[in-house]
Image 1: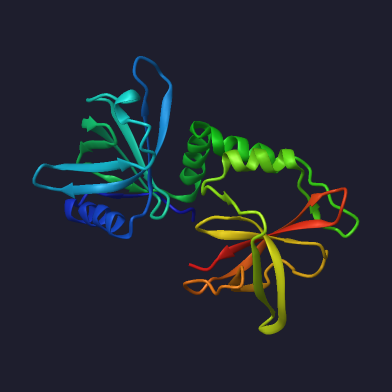
Image 2: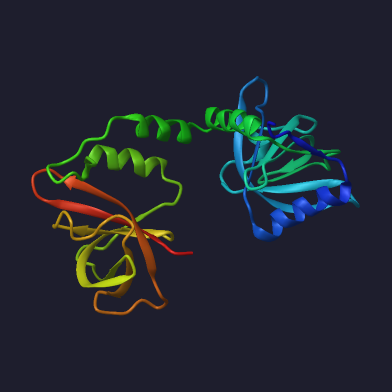
Length: 258
């Protein structure tokens, strides 16, 4: 029997949903019609407040420069979706100011079934040009070098950098990282690498040996420029790309553990 969408109308249960989203700082997506036309705009937000006194829910836009007032207006319909809980609701915009949007406390929320989730994700994708472009990039056939490693050209790197959610900072020239590599629970030894780039979520290192490091290897950052990091830095290799065809040069993508 196919999974069915559940409808929750208990105000206290709905309130608990929003309180949990706020507490855990889980993102919610909203979309509404733009001013003066049928086009819709997608916003990535977090819950700011929720109460039954004013009978309202407030959300904050994660992108400070995109003010709600530019795309929404009071009295317009708004759709809110939490991917974590598969929660979908429709409400009415009560008021808005810059990055704060307040809508009427919903009379019901839907915990959607898988079939509807697929439809919602298609809607989100159609409203989010970055996700659409990223999907198109991923659909391009991959190329591999003589060692079976995927090739990523400088043009590919530029395209991905524009669509990447977490900004990466180019490492200062000459930065060296000393790492410890473990595979299958066994420590393989220590190696040193030039740092390619770094972000809050990970680091990319350069290697000149095609099979020196493998995907899913566990990495511990021991030193950067001969200094130990101020706190433990450990992660897993999530990608290996050949980034130079004139010489053997690989970018090792490492995602830090949470």
